[in-house]
Image (cartoon, rainbow, N blue to C red):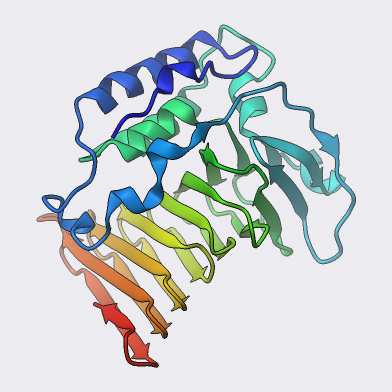
Length: 350
């Protein structure tokens, strides 16, 4: 598979540390293989289905962000269309309390081209860490747009935030990035909606990272409604501190060929995860979902329940793994996957 990533030039005004990160990602990508049957989590999904070699790389043009309109029932709203954020709205009283909802480019560039935001760099490097195949590094090289939501410590936000990611470009290889930070003992809910026109033909290689400090509570709702000609790959990770609580709810409804991965590291003692998901396959759709529940500290708990239905000639694959590290005594972990095969010719692998 050939792909000329050197034609992607980065963002206008991109700081040196970000260029260095892209360069390291290029180097790492060169030493990794494309996914294949030798990779356990890729043995049921063909990388060729994502048409990466046929796509056009996005162009990182100047980003112009408009002030969005207030949205009833929400605390803030960010709209990403194509390769850039187009509007952001945040309740003024939340901004005054330290909440930040900004485009990824604004967070990285931040008005200073020399200072390196260590936390942001760590997040972007985490996307690549431990990769066995090229795709996470490819994302890091080509990341073009995204959103950053920061909830300061001890703040309880009652109404949810809405992040809308709409792909509008035909035949593009898109690489959006989401970063969610919940400060110590904070509480918040974020709704992510991924969508495109029904006829759009494109490939999305996305990533998301959530970091929950000690005692934080985050509800992360992720709904994918891409058109049935969109190929979607997603690399999502979450790090949970002491007594942090993450609820992750995922609905995988659209897309043509889909390959998603969610890894949750329960790093702090007493951390807990609830992960619920649903997916539906019709016509010739192929959906491959994976979750890893990594218990790295004592007295952590996780509960994952995924339900799917499939009909026509569609195929779904669910892969789940519970990891318990030697020091993670008194772990309480649960994982279940249930499927309905509605017609002859459909297939669900669990």
